[in-house]
Length: 415
Image (cartoon, rainbow, N blue to C red):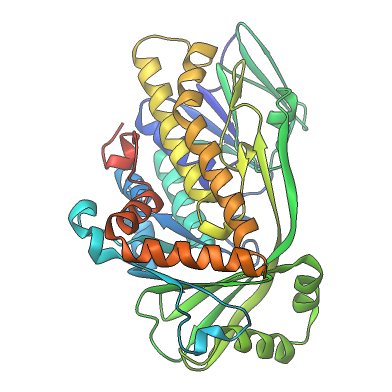
């Protein structure tokens, strides 16, 4: 059987494209398949979200030669302020007794002066990755859609809806939560709907945000103000699904009035820029990270609530780990699609994925309610962590992706 690539990656999103670039750097030939061409993915109306990128993952992008594309659009997060509130508008008043403050200066000696993370609009991330993929000469089939996958001892055979069949030793499902690759491999999922929706908008503020990210835990869900370049911010406003639908459908002046109640006047007048987006929130975990000649990555492997901003970061860390496992195996002459090789990837990422997903799920249930006992418990916990410097530093390093057994890319090293 002649192969069309060393690795076929279904899904040219942020995790899939990062994996392709890492594999190319490691000497393998990837091939990307996506239903949407890159140009359409870069349109402001395609994805209105912005993502908090852990500094270790940003370091990995630098190691892949992407710094020139990302750094002009990346906003450093210098501080994170987390507060608990009983009513909207708490942002404008005196802080409650229970709050958490994280400051990048506290871990500067361990992070080489990196911030707590970088805020980057998803369309900017997609644009930078598309430029990197083109420069690396990676083959992209788009628009193209996977119809099915079969595997045998010779490799994976990916059938496209246009009738073509592509062959490779390994196929990676990185298409998102609805993954034809995962379904074809017979890998089930577990999870549940939070009955919440994230309302996302970009705003411009009158006063400087100074690189501070705010997260207010309200009974309906968290309300996050995440700093962007040019004194803008990305708002991630979590509400019950019914309330979110009403917000998105409201007249602009009504939406703005509700927004200001939650935002408060501490950054002056706020102007909404661009459309308002909404995304349903749920938890979905794949029961396994691989099957014979199939590996899962990104949202195809784990879809989480954005409460801690770790969803994309988990996917990027997984891409760095999978690329390292595959390139090392290829250099040793191993079959990169064998279960022995894929088990190394799963073993590396399984515990971290499950623990982070469980932790974020616990946060959702702990903070998205107005139960007085739970409110007291979480307030005491926040106050305790805020008073213990080693605990704060641990959480900052964990959120920065710098804890544990890091892939070489996340240490700033090339493959």
